[in-house]
Length: 340
Image (cartoon, rainbow, N blue to C red; front, top):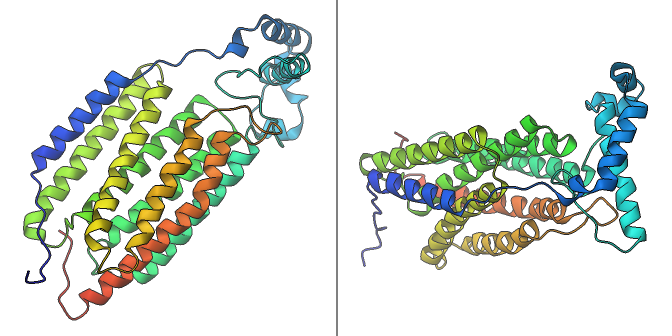
């Protein structure tokens, strides 16, 4: 061996074919969301009807009578009736030993100052802060000539954006905030996969040969994103498909990083970090797949998943910072490769 790195070349058409194949597979595996059992419970529906009749007949005035914290987050009298009746039925179910039911696709959380899921809001804010810290570090450490600089910074900013919308959605669930949360999340995952594939297979070392591949990969991911958003916008929102799409896109990034670590673990002392990150994030993902009633009506599996990702996001950026430092040290005195 002469010590030179092998060149990995991929035809752009293969990326488009792969993206189309994954899209078709996800559509086949898609499942249709159904109404929650609590919505159909006669005790709940009768309670809501009675509350609306007695408390919300003059709705503008009834809305104005709600506490300020509820009005600031756009709660209405009928929605407040749903919240109160949800917890009335939940208390009855607990007292009689029956199972806790979901209502409108959610567990019966206790709101705080009008915030629907306070634990998930707090953890979303902390995740966003970790991405912002990573952005600042990468912006400071990566010189402008470093080919991966723009990809790294855009990846971090899309991470911040995704957690901002996660915060908004968990604070107040509207159809628009739900879509903004899910669409920004899949966008961030796609950018993370683009970063992983570009870095793992060094699609920036030789601009003359790698630029068409990078562009083909970017176009394929943009096409996938457009198809994903269109499907979930113009057809009934399919929660099962959305989760499967996120898992598949995340798995692509994980496999790319593992392949990079296998090739570099002897020469890069920090390569182990990304393997630990992949293993930990995969294990933590079990919390997202699991589903159980919230502990103390605050902490459910989804909130715990958000809590688990906080230290993992920090660890992820520690790896990226180490990689930038190593690459910049190698690049000094050996020429600067420009991004095409």
